[in-house]
Image 1: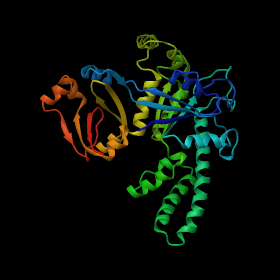
Image 2 (image 1 turned 180 degrees about the vertical axis):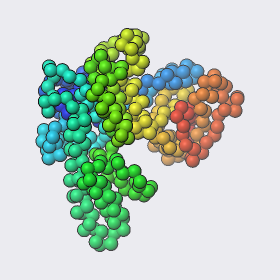
Image 3 (image 1 turned 90 degrees about the vertical axis):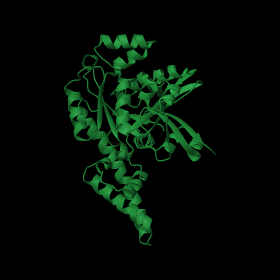
Length: 367
């Protein structure tokens, strides 16, 4: 399963600087003027997981392959984007292709860096982008409802069911609430709702870009955003993009840890993003291990064994027979696969097994 996050925000809030730091590339130009990012830049980063290294060591694996996250740096948005202002149409189309939104907010003062609205007010910035996303969803739903109403008059039951879901969402948007606020769908309604692929249905992670001095405890502006996120069921992390840019220049893991320690930080911004992103999208990590490679994979919470197998290859899911399963703790405590087997800690699970975070899995399949 991919984890694809679009990095969005108003111009000049630090999106491209953060993207460059996270992906350790200079693919996105960071400049002090609006729309310096036009085409969305995509970068994949490895997810650090100490469990994978321990599994690889016990398995004598020749290769260690972490799971990856994908970040997309999307052009800055301005008021009127839903009507095509700035690069609005392109911006909104790019967001639609992502699984979640990372909304970068400027939470620092700097007279040398202009703000598109003149002053630094992150809560106003949140409202600007949320409004544009809702306006875009409203326009999209109104068009779809007009078409669906004509079809429903012919007695099409499926269309009537779709129309009911769309009307519910439309009413929410008209009341000023994003689609994600609606949570009382039944299973069939939820499937129809997800197929709408609405911008305001996507989960949001707010990233407060603060000055270096506020990287540990945040500041007044980031505290406002944190409170807003808590009230609206979103994730929020405080990061200094400037610090992340410095970390990206360091060659070794030891140097990075030492640099973080001097700043009083325990983890990097990337680690914070990963942890929050996993919670946001209800993701988990499972592993496969052997002499050739030890590898981490990502799937959804609640995924059954065949679904997890499909994250490796569609043939694995299609021809799934069983999953030989060892929990991470048992794998470590019993000194690897053989020890876990001898201790009776390997389980044979069928198609209904719900994969758990940290499982080491060996799939049996037949195509």
